[in-house]
Length: 215
Image 1 (cartoon, helix red, strand yellow):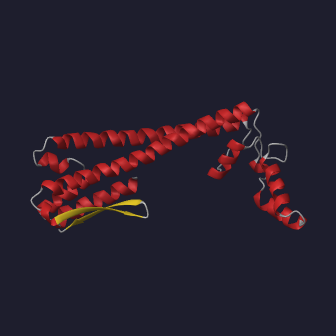
Image 2: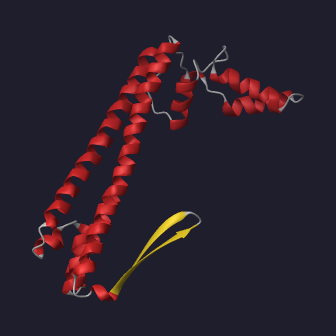
């Protein structure tokens, strides 16, 4: 998301240096929704600007909540799954949520890997060992949940974190849409609107919005 804002600021700065007045209005509205509308005396520009602030606030909130819950689930696993503090991959945390332990006991991840190796290479002990060596967790990646209830509670916390992350992704899309809507609005009512056109099409079931504007 930071890259998006940097990109928009670059566009705005370039427009201020090189663009004509009307073109500058479009780019200003693209960078800051409602800005050109407000400068042109259109009151609904304040609505666009307020909407932008609310969207950004929601985006920060969702990301913050996701990070807090992610940290909470990590600390919960340390306490109830006896996880050693450290850096782990997302795949590891998915396995942590699914299996009772990392070991070869019933319900353990390594036990599942061993069974998979036997199914894949039933008559090849060497390949079985190689598969297990490549996929089993080592002692320094050990975990063992105190109870299934603890693992279920961990899943609930982790799922809430993922939900907030998804909300943030959707909010990011709404943020971009607000910028685009503001720019299109300026193109619509500006004196040079006849030099621009908008088209919508579908490509392999993917919606495509095309903007053509002559500077």
